[in-house]
Length: 391
Image (cartoon, rainbow, N blue to C red; front, top):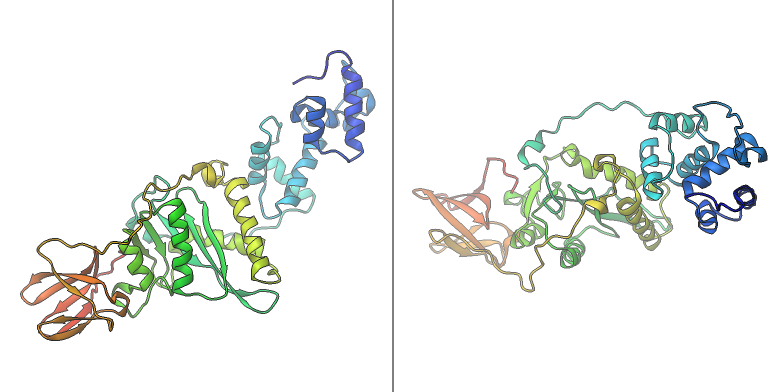
C-alpha cells in the first residue's frame, strides 16, 4: 500500500513526526495514514538512516551498510524479546510474522546476532539426547484427541505459604494445553471434576498418558488401577502408563511444564487465585499466540479441534464377551467364587469384572479390556499379570 499521491513527502514527514512523539504505536499510525505496517517500518528506517532528506521523492540516501537490518526492524525484534524473554529468535520471528505477514524480517541467524549484541541471549547448555523406547508402543499420532497427556506439575508454595498443585492436560498432536488448574491438594475428586468438565465441553480422547503417581495409578493395585482409572476405562479411554522413574516417556508434557514454571512460578504469585490468573494468561498465550517450531511456526490452536466422542449423560457399565464369567465386586474389593471371597481391588467396588478360562482352573481377569491379572482357583487368589501392559 503506497502513500497518497497528492503529497507523499508531506505524508511521510508527518508520519515520522507523529511516530517520534511516542504517543502512537505502529499499527495505529499505519491505520491513520492508510499504509501497510511494512511501508511504515521502511519509512522509519529510511528516516533513521538518512534523516529528513531521505523522505523526499527519489531520494538515494546512502545506507550505512547494504545488508544492514533496518533499525526499526531491529527495534521490533528487541521489543518482541522483552515481551517474550524466554523465546528464541526463530520463535520471535514466527510470532512477528503471524502478527504482520508484510514485515521484511531478517534471517534467524541475523535476529540471533541482534539479540546477542543486546545481551538478551542466555547461553544454552548442550543436552544429551535421551532415547525414548516407549514411543514404539504408541501408534503414530496423526490427529488431535488421539493421545492426551496428564500430570500434576511439581508442587510449590505461593506467597501465602500454601501449597499449589497444578493439574495439566495437553494434546500430543496439536501441543495444545487443555487444562492448567491450580489446586491446594491432589485428590481424586479434584482431578475427575476438572477432567469431566473438560470432556463435557470438548469431548473424550482416545487415550491418556499418565505417570505412576496418585490419583492416576495405585502401585499396589492390580494393573495399577485407581478409581480415576476405573472411571476412564468406563468412558472408553485407554490408559497409557509411563515407566516408573522415566519422565522422558512423557517428554513433550515435561517440556511444557518447564516453560510453565519459568513463566508463571518464578517467583510464585501471592495466593492460589493469583496463581490461577497467571496460568490462565499463560494458556491463552501458549495456545493462541506462541509459535511452535514443531508445528511449522503455527500455534497449537491452529491444529486442534474438539473430539467427536461426546460425554455420556449416563455412565454405562462395562460389557464382556458371552463366554466370560462375570462377577460383581463387593464394597471391600472382593468377589465371590464358589462360596469363597477373592480379593481384587478396592478401586473396583460395585463394578463387574470378567473372567476368561485359559486352562483348567486358571482364569484371566479383566475389567473392560484391561487385563488385571491371573486367577488361580486352587490358590483362591488373583496374581498380578507379570507381563507388562500399558492398558
